[in-house]
Length: 249
Image (tube, rainbow, N blue to C red; front, top):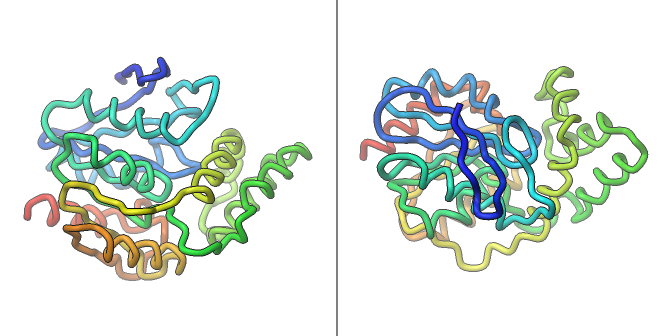
């Protein structure tokens, strides 16, 4: 286990496995670095895989005041801690963090798996408020279930995973509020970018990828057959193949 200090003084813990070009994995909301446990073994023969807990969970600390910029600074600090120019892969909310950070990081390539960008208001624009209302009632598991239902993932996580997510559901609420407030404006990553879709992923995230594909200067796309939003767990070998092919281009 390693740790670095982010710009606001928060300690961010990370692990490495494998040997080769660094590959930094950025997990989504309601998750921890362990969410990549199925994917890492398929990449560790080709990359030095770096997984870290985003702030507010696992082995990482949290600041007194949360903002999206703190998330971006954390990722930049992790990238600066590794040797060489890494590939960065962001999943879901982690994809939004990676997109925002990319243009000011020394990285080789970027992979965005269904990043949490809203085109329109698929959640009604008040999902963060609904999660916080359940929290105010003391219903932590219910707050997670509200989130999962809104993003079309109610049947995807087993109950133990839902209960684990309930332990960090405050981070879910604040991250959803970031997503609801985020304005894509004129994005640029500065590096070749692979946009990954699950064939069965949420339609609003497909629309987000379509929007990014039209806005970014240098993109490729990969669609994971028979896979939804959680292909990092349900089809890790297929995702790893797409990452390897992209990194070797």
